[in-house]
Every structure is written in structure tokens, then in C-alpha cells.
Length: 132
Ligand code: FES
Image (cartoon, rainbow, N blue to C red; front, side, top):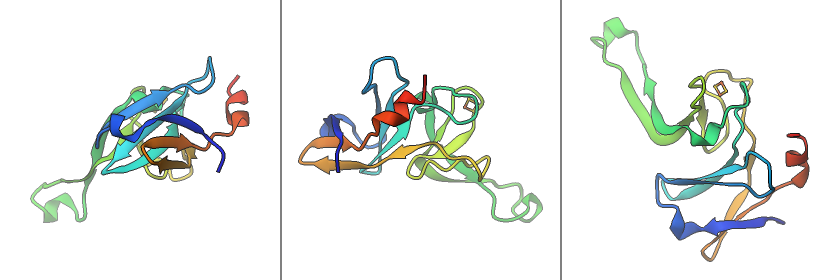
């Protein structure tokens, strides 16, 4: 795998993130530590190009039965696995980039490996050239 070293794993604790800009003038890539696993997402929301990776990391509400059957109880699941865009609150699965609002939408993800303590992201420069 080709790639660039974007930082040290020990610098991003569980639940943490950093946004790196590997090429000047670009929106960058968000690197997330979700329960000890690292993920990389393009920092551009596919909805209206908001700075997705600066949004709130949280979980999501879950309803597995009609509210009348659960006394109105709404569950909460996947804490720390979902990012919410700061512009219009669309939610995305950090691990897969899948949008939870629209199943046809996905934010670009990048392969990331931990080599010793180095975090290496496989970045295709052409992905960023398209952002102009
Ligand atoms: S720009 Fe991200 S939800 Fe609209």
C-alpha cells in the first residue's frame, strides 16, 4: 500500500480525531479512533460540501418497535461511531462512510493502517485534484 504518514496512533485517543490536510488548499481528511480502530474520511460532506469531519461524534437513536409498544422509550446505540455534519446534521457511519439519512449517499473513506505507531493513509492525489 502506498500512502502518507499522517500522525502517531498514540496522539489520537479512543473517541478522538484529527483533521489533516495532506495537500495545501484542500479540505483534508478526518482521522478517527473509534473503540481503538482507526478510520479516515474525506472532510467534505456529500450533501452540500460542509466540513463533515468537524461535526459531533455521537451515537444514534434506535427504535425497534412502535412508540406505543415501548411507552415512548427511544433507545440509543453505537455511541462514538457516528459523525453528524455540522451544517445540516446528516449522519454518517465513521467506519464505512455510509450516510444514515440517505442509503444512496456515502462519504469517501481511505484505507488506513497502523505501522508501529505510525498512522498511514492510502491517499490518491487525484481525489483531491477533483476538489478544485
Ligand atoms: S452539508 Fe453536510 S449535511 Fe448538509
